[in-house]
Image (cartoon, rainbow, N blue to C red):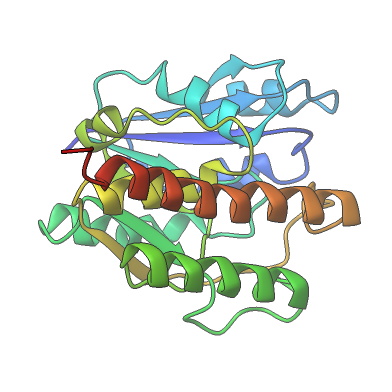
Length: 235
């Protein structure tokens, strides 16, 4: 099975070497680091570790993921992973297992099902993730608890979903579109640790509120869009 790993980065020089070193090489066909204007040497470190570095100067977490998707080399499965070492790349087999065993089309690593390291996920992020996951369960059906960034999906499923969100709404677009299309979304518990370096989301009030807005508004917007599409037309 060909597995491509996409890692969006912005100034992750303190962590990227550990992230790349911990990826199980026997499971990964290629590693693509999508870098957004880092000025701390992140791209150079990633390239020295054997990753393929793709520059994406435009802002947006989803945009970086989409840029990575556009450059993958014929994978069977695509994995998305943050470059801050909060998720452990060594747990890739846990994430891939439901797909390789034929039980899932999309897998999500839940940070809320397992014991977290102290301080790894601030209370407001725990609350926001539980709220968003609860809305998705209520409106769309998949039994999830978290919107963690460590996730994987079959490449043909990603092509079918035609993902387009360039913001932090990316975190829910894959789940919602996958559920609406009838694909199997399965959650697995993963460990979670304090990130290396400052968070671009939870580390600032602006980042937290911005991410929450994009995520919650997209959940509601897709729900009403789906209802309109499913409503019968005039007789």
